[in-house]
Amino acid sequence: MITIDELIQQGEDITPQIKIIPPSFDVIRIGDVYGVEKTEEYENWKANVKRFIRVNYPNDKSVMEFEKVSSNKLSPTNHKKLLAIIKAIKDIPQPNTASNDSINKNREIIINNNNINQIQNMELKNEINIIFTQCIKEELTGRQLKEINEIIELHKNEPEKAKPKIIEKLKSFGGNLLSSIIANIITNPNIYSNFL
Image 1 (spheres, one colour):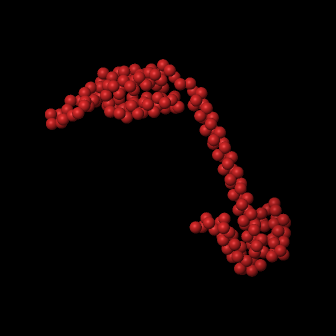
Image 2: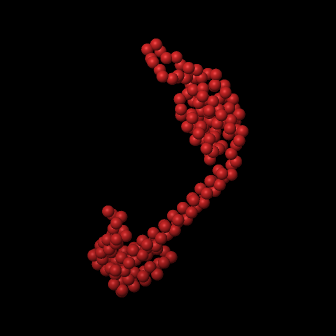
Image 3: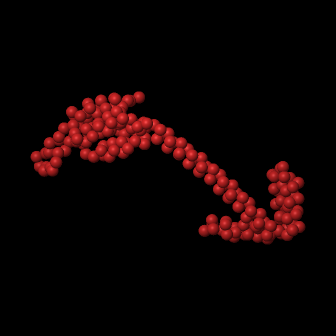
């Protein structure tokens, strides 16, 4: 695992490699353009430093500062700024209490959101049950409802056995009844709006 001291040393080793790129004879430049002998090595170093400080110092303002400076053009001045940032992180590390506090706050938010979702799901199930019950009651007569309830009560521990008997009973009440119950459910305002 790489250490902050190794990253600082790598950055210092890169410093003498940063040199002015002379313009070609047909190019007029305003300001100097710099390059580095081993571009891949330099880009890897920047990526490693970014990753290291993001992981080890997630709430430190230096993370954003390093990213901002590293997105500027390569120059000895900008490179010295990058080195200064990681040296400052090493010399004055941020305590981890802030990151622990934010982790705990995030956990609390997740737990609260889960509780809210569970409550909303229960409320939705209750609302759907009420809608279906009302729609069925509106289409059945008192006697028909009593017959259905008797089948349910008889097979309350074995709902799978009750299902074909309830279907048979509903069919015996007439073909239009099932269509009416379904139409009543679909046209309920709480359900109908989901079809639009």
